[in-house]
Image (cartoon, rainbow over all chains, first blue to last red; front, side, top):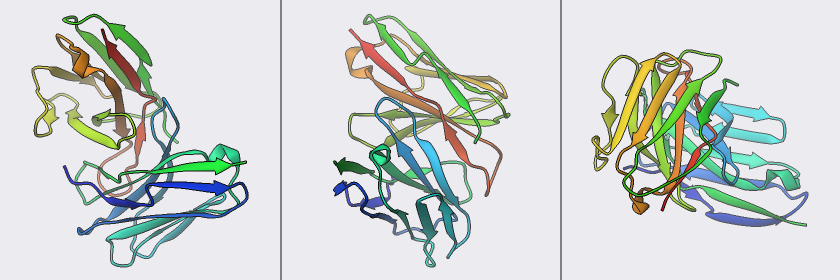
Length: 110
Length: 117
């Protein structure tokens, strides 16, 4: 099935650094979601975006719904060890099914 | 956020047996639940959409007789892997939406690690 293009695939950063990842698509969506998944667990919703251009924060996390409705980014400021995990973007257009990104694996170097 | 509980978290079964996985929305009613399969280091692959009171909608390539889905109530959907084989070993995850249309967020269960030996 269709997947969103998520980049980068993996990131190795030092604690305290900022992180940025993004998702792009050739299709328009009207909802973008960002999830975090830790090993052996299901994804946990971080931020939900419902309007083009919307910029939403959740603590150190900030995400934006691209104005073209074909992309979204997630920023994490001042990373800490517990930020380690795989981050997925997801999007849908009106119907129930979510399309998922390929994931960004975040590793923090002490 | 809303809570979705999945049970069991891990199961090991013998080839040829069937395994049932439960997905419950604990603090909200979910007319629609989704079942995903996730291979190691890969993204989530939608298997089927489970609709309360009606037949599930399966994605292309997913065998409906192999993966039986029942959504008998607004808070419970079950996935039964029938006549399991080692290649069915995987991480299965369910999700439930808190409503319909825009603004309805999808929350995930904690996943079930199935190992078929």
